[in-house]
Amino acid sequence: MAVILICYLPAHAQIGNPGMHLNRNVLIKKLTEADSSLVFKQDTDISLLPNFVATDANGSRAQLIGKPDELMIVKWTYVFKADEKVNLIELQKLAWFANTLGDQEGLDWFFAQLAELGKDYKKPVSEIKMFDSKRKGEISYSPKEKTLTMTFTPW
Image (cartoon, rainbow, N blue to C red; front, side, top):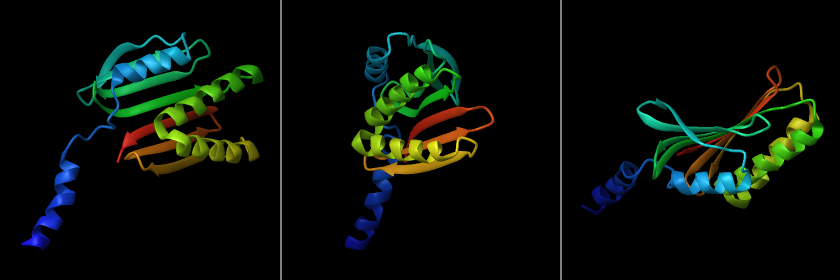
């Protein structure tokens, strides 16, 4: 009987709230406090989930997909510019984003990936990390489009 209960508990725990335990309105408030040029608007739903998108003055795009208390995807995308000052500002926002969603572990992970990218900007990057907060992070860089994307999802 004890063996059956032990086997049942992990499966039962996974059936619960599938989101990242992030409140969309709180996250939008944090993001807009960090960058006042972000204005979130509801876009076309994705897989029947609400989709909120904002683009800042430098072209960075933040996207929040999921129910208000069950965000399923939180994504930040930046296309590098010729202006190094703008790139530095946007990389600082990405660092803040990594820290907000992955704590210090997320920030360390972001800087490690940025260091790899700095070695060769012509090489694509794709790195996934599982965080203790039951979130999965992915950083990808496409040299062809010069696009850096950071995405968090539940795991």
